[in-house]
Image (cartoon, rainbow, N blue to C red; front, side, top):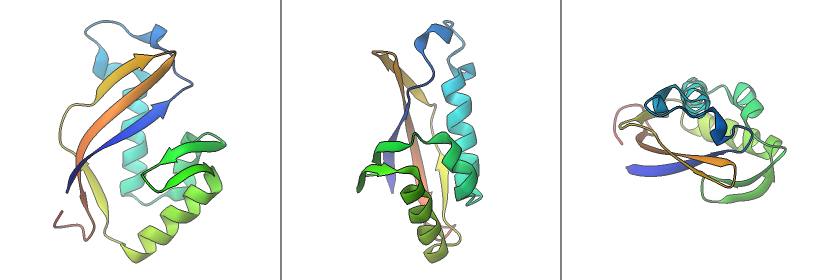
Length: 115
């Protein structure tokens, strides 16, 4: 399964951007760390990256507290202990109204092998 996931990083502004250094932006580093922790199934560590209330998480959770997301991740990873996500292309950033949106292209492996 190949899909696009949007991660909104509202607390990092476009002011830090230097042309030609897109992969060094703070947003990219945050997303890379987020997916490293996801692949290690460290839901409690990931929680620090979410706002108190998250507008949209994946596609089913909307306007939920970060604790709900953490519990959801723990339940999901218990059901799929080998789940991992592989980023397969360069991360793309768009800036609008002081909010950076990072688009990630990747594959999710529910069983750790097939996607």
